[in-house]
Structure formats: C-alpha cells, structure tokens
Length: 71
Ligand code: SF4
Ligand code: SF4
Image (cartoon, rainbow, N blue to C red; front, side):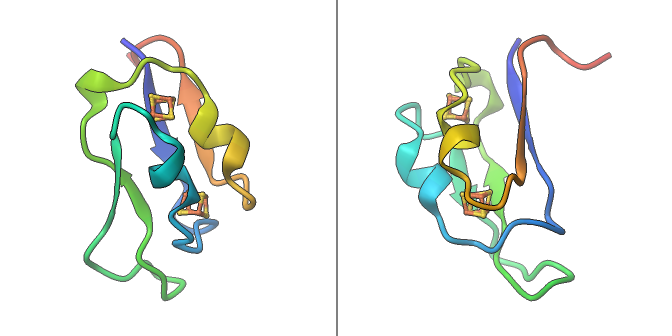
C-alpha cells in the first residue's frame, strides 16, 4: 500500500501538498513542529495512491512517497 512520510524538520506548513492531493490524504497538524510550523500530516493513508503530486509541489522537499508498504 502506498504511503507518504513528511519530514517535519523541513516542512514549513505552506499547505500546498494538502491542496494538491486529490484524495484528501493530507491535513495540517494542530501542534507546532520543532521548527515552529504546523507541519503536514498524512491523515488518510488508506486513500493514498502514491501518485506523487504532493512530493512534486512541495518547495521544501519535505515529502517522501513510498510505493510499497514499509516493513
Ligand atoms: S502521493 Fe498522491 S494520493 Fe498520496 S498523499 Fe500524495 S498527493 Fe495524495
Ligand atoms: S508542501 Fe511541503 S512544506 Fe508545504 S506543507 Fe506540504 S510538506 Fe510542508
């Protein structure tokens, strides 16, 4: 099953990834990251298709897309 991982140390909370995800898999955290932003989180990994759009729009290279489930 595809999934994504957000690197909170790079994310600046711009929300571009959440807007880009047609499957509405991404939302913003309600708690600050260590760098002082509300980072993106994957809220519905079961809906992720691994399309990579979120990765492509992220200006901070904070998202990694995994095509297969991590062991
Ligand atoms: S890989 Fe595609 S479906 Fe999955 S979270 Fe990113 S934009 Fe959404
Ligand atoms: S596009 Fe990148 S920097 Fe912006 S909220 Fe998403 S993960 Fe964070």
